[in-house]
Image (cartoon, rainbow, N blue to C red; front, side):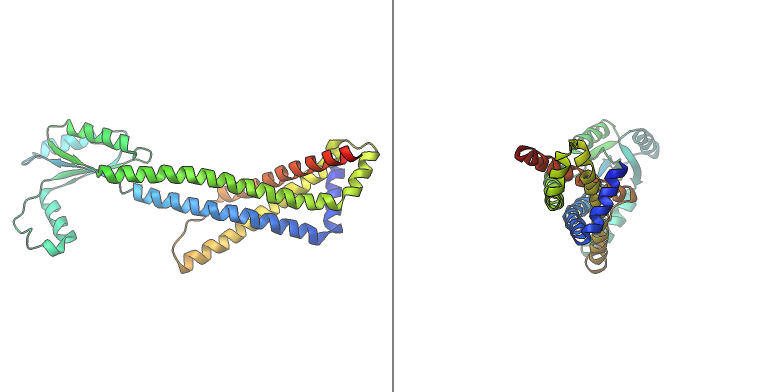
Length: 286
């Protein structure tokens, strides 16, 4: 291991421009991957904000007694799917309608609106099936006259989330593959520059692992440096977008660390593939 690290340091000293070019190439390839990750995170955040608005409204029968409403709320609080529940009295419902539909304020004079109970569901319980199950449970109460939750809207939102998840996974895999190919090509440039040295090591009896190790360490280090550079570039891009276009969500601290480590892993993988391919070629020619 000490010899391998020494070889890596010497390689950086012998060809610093080539080493920097490798780091920059890896950094920009991971930057493209990071931008995709930022887009995916912000889309997911936007969908989560929309999902937070998913609510079920149970309209109550006319002249519902306070005791019946209190009993209904006590039962609803025990639903595992429910995050929050609130009662809207007939007067409050009418006042809200007049505020939200001010152009129809005159028409609503003397209008009676039924009281209702509004439910907000916990995260993970907002898919169409769960929402429908809660609605059916509400309909079983005698004090509930009608239940509405915007079924078509909830189903469309769920489809959009599923499509975004599938597309995100596929594109993420493609970007990762492209990053591995670019990193592998970058490492291969360094290997080709030292072909003669590898051939000499082969002639003196060096094992495959002994030859591989410096390049694997080199690839991992370049991947880590490229990952850090990609994070900086992504942060700069997100800052510019937030200041000039719209507020964006950036990676968390854990995601940043995982991103840099992923850069090192991709660099290691790219080096492994490139070194293995080149060594097989050298062995055949030897």
